[in-house]
Every structure is written in C-alpha cells, then in structure tokens.
Length: 207
Image (tube, rainbow, N blue to C red; front, side, top):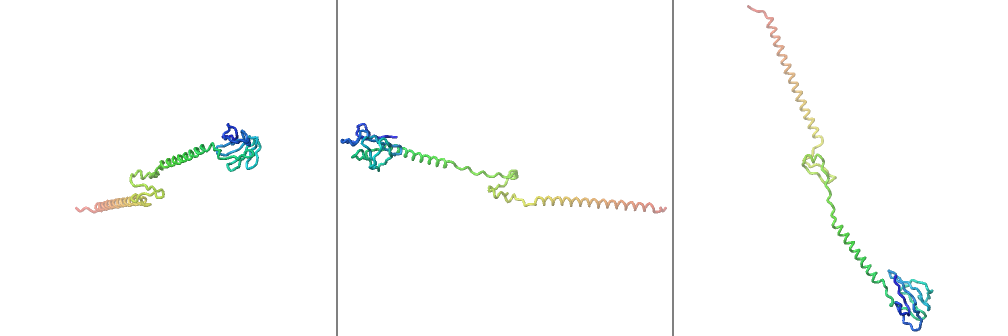
C-alpha cells in the first residue's frame, strides 16, 4: 500500500502553499491499494472536511475523486495533484495477463491441431477366412458377411452328404442282390447236373 502525505511542510509529498496557516504542516495522508482504492487519514489540527463533513482526527475514511475535500477553513483540495502510484503497474499486469491468455490459447490450438486421431482398426476376419486365404471381410460391423462366391446355402453340405450315402447304400444293395442271384443260379445248375447224373445212372444198360 502506497501513502501520500499532504501539508505545508516541505517534507510532504504534496506541499500546499498556504501562508495563512489554514493547512497544517502534516495535514492528511492519502493511502492507495493495488486496485487504486483510496482512503484519507486526518493528521491535522485545523481539521479535514469530506463533502463539508469534518473528519475525526486520527480516523481513516474511503474516498473517491468525486468527493470534495477541504483542508482547514478555506483550502479546497485539488485532486489533480494526486497521481495514482499503481496505475503503471496495473497496466503492466493487464498487458501481461492478456498476453498470457493469448499464448495459452495458441498453445492449446497447436496441440489440438497436431493430434491426428488414429485410424479405426479393422475388425478381425473369422478363422475360416484366414485359413482359406481368400475373400474379403466386410469392415461394417452390421454387414459381416462372406463374399458371394464364398457363400454356401444352408443345408447344401448336409444334403450332398446324404445323397452320397444313399448312392453308396443303393450300390451295395445292388451288388449284394447280384451276388445272391448269381449264387442261386449256380446252385440251380449244380442241382440240375446232379439230377441228370442220377437219371443217367438209373437207366438200364443195353448190351
């Protein structure tokens, strides 16, 4: 907090050239904070008046540049004599803060622009596709289907297997039937030969 002393004394920050002794040697003190707010402390013997109301000696009251200050009975205080000691510092802080905000925004923008999203990984193909080594696996998760040339109608494989089994069974039955017929024919021929031989044996012998 900065303080500015006001009075007739040459050691004051603001010297009031009063020859009638209406202003005390150390009449009042103006205090500033960093934001520029002011308070006045009365240190006079002739009195300090704020808007025509006298301050109690030793007290401090917040004031602005719109308040009318009177020192003693006749001297009206000129606010143009008071310079804000923190005005330069505030401007520097505001400028630095603005620059810092700009730098932060630029850094965030550069970081976001430099981060390219990684490409989406393609879904893994089914095991049978990997083993066959052909065909393309659709990337769309809602349409994971085999290519047209790889599609097999439901039931085709089972039906083909059943037809092959039926064909083998029919061929086996035909072979068995053929063997049975052949065996039956051979048996008939053998029996017929036996009958002929028997009849031949029973015939009388003519000398």
